[in-house]
Image 1: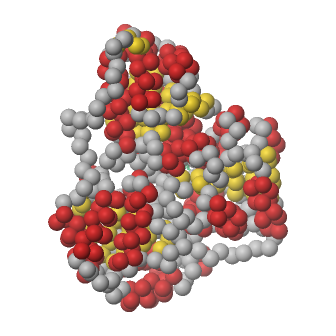
Image 2: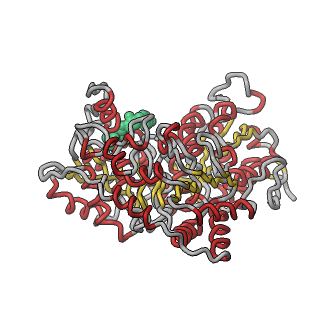
Image 3: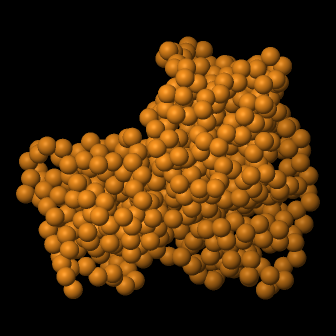
Length: 581
Ligand SMILES: Cc1ncc(C[n+]2csc(CCOP(=O)(O)OP(=O)(O)O)c2C)c(N)n1
């Protein structure tokens, strides 16, 4: 076996792992790797315009294809620019491997040019990280990094490679299956635990399946199993922001998203349930609201591949450490083997229908101004037959998209849930388009968020990616303004999006088509024009400036203290909610 440079070993290991696309940005400390990529020609490198965008593009690629995203950046500022996306991937459980260049080993710790302590900085925002000091270990570290990023609860792994290690030579051969000393994620649950879940579901009078991104991470088969589980148990299904698409939005059993901007019926059902079965969801604060009044009378089952998620915020009656798909497969099998009849949940559904009748997603319409919710629905009308991939930025537009754009399938909804990163949507759309060349990919954006990674318009142009950006332009950082209206007596400190660029001219400057929509009558035609263009298009859709996103559970409040559109002025739904339950 001949010796190869560390850089060649790295590229060969990536090829052995089936990597087809890398998102990156060059610099001094990664030049040997760039040279190896150039010579090898086996991996497609996508040159972004900012390292943060490389990480979000890798997330978009991963989330939409189920394959890990790969990033390559230089030392120092290259690595620190990537930190936001790495943290984003950690919170949203996205499989990602980030290779960072590092100064030569002899200079580490000397404040060398473009030196940053990448392993130290990323320790708390990675699932695992490495500093590779020996080229002979590089190949096996890369394989191990992919194993860790993609197994158990997926997440980001950083591999920091000093420049001298990229140049030094060693032997490489493709390793066999990875056997890590201590890392052994549990995938299948004990049969007895699954039997207990089945017993509890069969006996429950008011069950609810609370589903999350873990089902999407488990693969498309898991979504099918969820449908089957819902069918045989008759239980209502709600989903977190990250789980949207794992259960069809059009199903009568779907209550919509739960939590802070979730539906009235989903939150009331969670509050009044006697059994919550959480599958691949983590009881985060946007979902639970005030913890001491969160679903006070239910027994709680938590199925999660990450042991440390169980009992983290909410006391759980039965924790099951398992992959969501495997656990549901076992539940369905045992339920059927025992020939459980479908439980009688008629009374429960009658109450749910009462909450549903409130029609909490209704919004005031206007013939002169485009209501943002209406714009999202029009976008859905015009595109849903094409199964589009939707990415978002962060703010009101993100929540309106979650509420009003119905997702029928997994891997079609890409949003920054845990970290809430403005600037995620455009690069994520670019990554998704690269992974799904024939798909319709739309970034639903706000005029403030889109400016956080606007430079990526050039990336889409360079690679001829027909990404669409649909800006709901309310001239405000709308979500900030909404909170200021509701909790700071409308003192709108720094939340006006002043000095906005002309987005149409800006699009054209980057080689995109730009469209402005200003009136409700022009909405459908504007969307049709966007869809008719086979290249990238940015739509600047002027919407009602002061519209609020409801329903809303104010931060730290209980599910029953939800503010609905209907009583925006008069206060919370508390009394009516209590009357209904
Ligand atoms: C990087 C980053 N900085 C700040 C915030 C806080 N933040 C959340 S929503 C928001 C306003 C977003 O405004 P815009 O993109 O116009 O969307 P809108 O809410 O108007 O739909 C801000 C500043 C954030 N989420 N991310």
